[in-house]
Amino acid sequence: QVQLVESGGGLVQAGGSLRLSCAASGRIFSINPMGWYRQAPGKQRELVARITSGGSPSHADSVKGRFTISRDNARNTVYLQMNNLRPEDTAVYYCKAGIRDDIGIFRDYWGQGTQVTVSS
Picture (cartoon, rainbow, N blue to C red):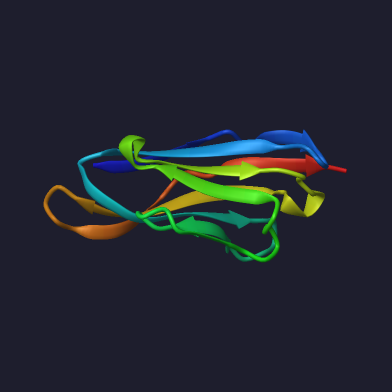
């Protein structure tokens, strides 16, 4: 079994910061891309940022300069540092990872989601 567990969401005022974490555990052989998505009420889930196993990041235009994705391969963990938060960043944030398990099967896994609420 492989699972992703997220933490770090919460309520913050506009201009504040939060750091999300997502740890993968279980029968993991390798993890390739890891990413963060978000879904606001009434909207589609959208990609916020992703990072390759080699550490190459990419960020959505809406968060560039404010959010930073990083990963710790030794801990199978991906982070999202969110600074200068805005009310429009309010959403449920999900992590996603492409994982090959110990019997060679590769598939995408999702975390359970963590709520981020930014008050104005």
